[in-house]
Image 1 (cartoon, rainbow, N blue to C red):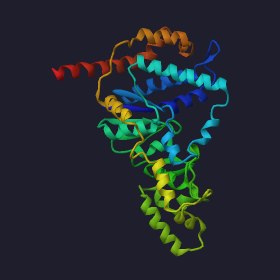
Image 2 (cartoon, rainbow, N blue to C red):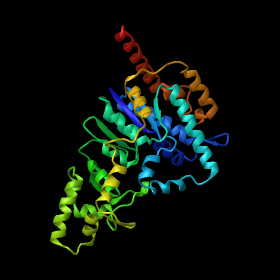
Image 3 (cartoon, helix red, strand yellow):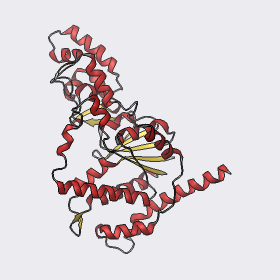
Image 4 (cartoon, helix red, strand yellow):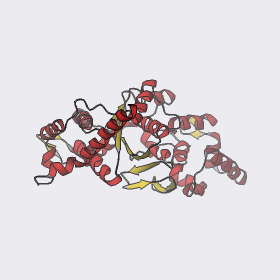
Length: 338
């Protein structure tokens, strides 16, 4: 069983800002087209059996914000105007409607982020999974059963690969450690004062070649400090100095809690629903390709497809195969229960 796990808002944002010139009757449709087309191509490329899209829920960052009030404060500036916000919200809602018709599973839970949903799925499922996201936080999920596709790099990563992170080469399993120590500008998480990724790799070159634990970093830092007690960077690291103050061990505990997905922040309802997404059949009630065709006409998706009579058939064919796979699962399950 091969499953694609998608960070929905991450993928939609890429299309929303990256495919700027696709409009229909004055409405931007670049986000919608890019999202559906990406799933279509992925299904073909990886011979998928199932696609699951996770979305950031209402107040999804609430748990981490309670732990660290500055978490994602910088995200407010991403959507610049009310018109842009309305367009994003419209396309997001429309993509979700398409996915319902196309037998793509979805999870969106209040007070939960998509990252946590994806992490829970990979931890609880025995399926082979591919995580589709440019979010570096999800690199930590790589394992013998989970690979990571980063669309920014256009590359599929396995657990022993080297990844480009902050313009530096880094063993993929060490992205989490670097985020804990150096912080993460994209999520507004502060790190050790005057210690960026480049300098950290210079201090700890083993981060480039093999998985390293936080304890190893602390132990090696103590050795470096004994060698040179005037090294302010190492001293900052050992005492937890940030631009906001000195936090000591509390700094590492806090950043690890925010960054780590080992114990996803999910509600009980979210956990139960994810269990269903893994094991339960999809309800075919109300799903119809006639609905999909109608939506494509309404949204002008046909206007951006190649100019041929069978373009829409080629566009939807992967989803027809996905539908057959999901329906076959349903038939098999019914027979087994009998």
